[in-house]
Length: 183
Image (cartoon, rainbow, N blue to C red; front, side, top):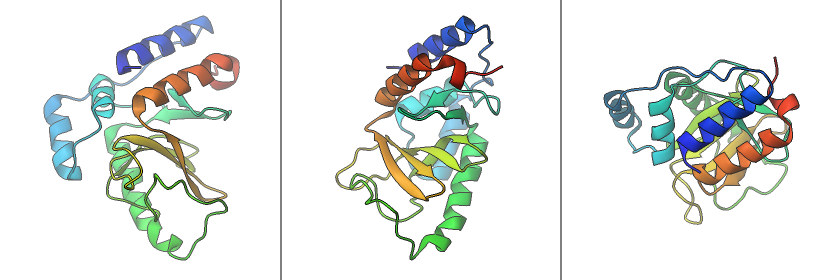
């Protein structure tokens, strides 16, 4: 599913429950080019397109959901994304000897921070993050979606790419619009 189709379908879901779906204005190509220079890698095309369309949304406004989770994720602005990424980098030192309660999917690199991990959505002040993975393991794919979950602290594989994630997210929101889109 492409970005425009996803956002149009999400807007229709909001309208069905008498809510307004609103996002911030998108970033220019030059701003996205500058961000890529700062990051040191090219953004996965759907993520670049998403930020070109909208530079995040309002806090507590559902833009994404994970399959089988009753949790809404708000869409981060690029600036907020970079702040969460920096926070992950600083916190990684505290996880040096940490062992996850479940074995990590081999598509995800080890550790608690990789230069190519870029959060794009969050819940609860970053206790839950959705991350576009620009540095997957040899078994993974560039642009795969992974998630950080606090308590227990885990990194989970969600989807091989953002397009499939958009489909999963929309399906979850369609199943539970009253739970995931609130007044």
